[in-house]
Image 1 (cartoon, each protein chain N blue to C red):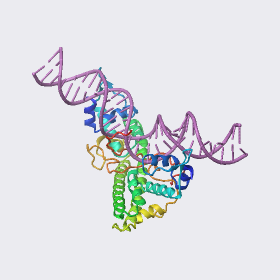
Image 2 (image 1 turned 45 degrees about the vertical axis):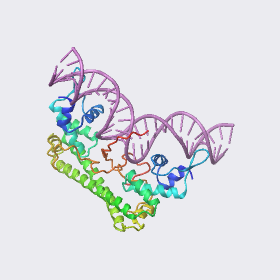
Image 3 (image 1 turned 60 degrees about the vertical axis):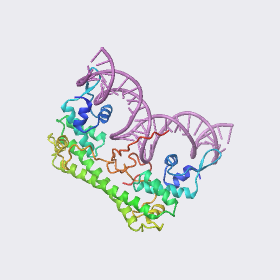
Image 4 (image 1 turned 135 degrees about the vertical axis):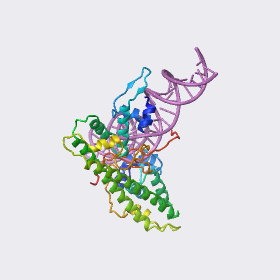
Amino acid sequence: MNIGQAAEASGVSAKMIRYYESIGLIPKTVRTEAGYRVYSDNDVNTLSFVRRARDLGFSVEQISELVALWRDRDRASTDVKRIALEHVDILERKARELQEMAATLRHLAKHCHGDERPECPIIEGLANDDGGHGSDHRPAPRFGASGLQPARRGAASKGARG
Amino acid sequence: MNIGQAAEASGVSAKMIRYYESIGLIPKTVRTEAGYRVYSDNDVNTLSFVRRARDLGFSVEQISELVALWRDRDRASTDVKRIALEHVDILERKARELQEMAATLRHLAKHCHGDERPECPIIEGLANDDGGHGSDHRPAPRFGASGLQPARRGAASKGARG
DNA sequence: GTAATCCTTCCAATAGTGGGAAGGTCAAGC
DNA sequence: GCTTGACCTTCCCACTATTGGAAGGATTAC
């Protein structure tokens, strides 16, 4: 099948299939004489695998390891477990950070009158650096401090879940 | 003071100060005859404000609103509260998504022997799409479905490609 | 035989940040 | 006054993952 059909069958866009191929995440396919990429059912399985791993928030680099493991069934499942558990840690740490941020902000918002008066602890908390979770001049933990690669931001192409 | 000192005092790198200026997040500064940017203590306050907002996960666009609000104290705190609360929602939704991912993965990992045997429910869950939270072929919720912009990852790069 | 659709590759943009080159400036030391 | 070194300037590139589009070739439908 062509790339378009493989895209539909796997849920990975044609654009992304080409991208994944270009970065070596998936192997190069056979081509027709005209240069069209040709995909087998097995290729579609790999693509679906990749898509689901992305859905779980794995980075392309991690998926790369996972795909190699998946394609080589002789490898010990220890490796897979390690990667998964590492990822669980990152995910949970990230979730905690996000919750702390939310709590800080919610605390600030709670004390903001929200009427016409300009007094607002959110603004003051931000300006005075006493916002709640004790940040001083550490150079920003933020995202990525944990090593999580958060994939994408824009525009779910066909329909995100709400 | 120069950009380096402002960077040190605010915790925002000189690179980022220039970037924030270029995108209009902070106003253009006065320059010396030689073209050096000059910063006042007040400018450093603005920069610190921006840094803390980034720490809390605000996107540059949101910070832009916040900075405008902050600099114009006549504006009603309603706006600030609204922005903050919107952000709290996003943060909490994101945290929940992350926790779901972690739970799915942890569930899979729990049933993985992790020894030499190649049977591994993680791999099988990924390949067979029965991983636990009932995903079918929806085209990836992932990050960004919520509108959160996850800032950075900190990939230190040295090797050129090409 | 042409139009519509699909495919190809290449380029740009997104958001936010770091790295570095090429060159100008400033302050200190001799 | 000259060198040294630290600092500044602008500009370009890298990275992540993904989308969009342009220009042109291939296939398919009518």
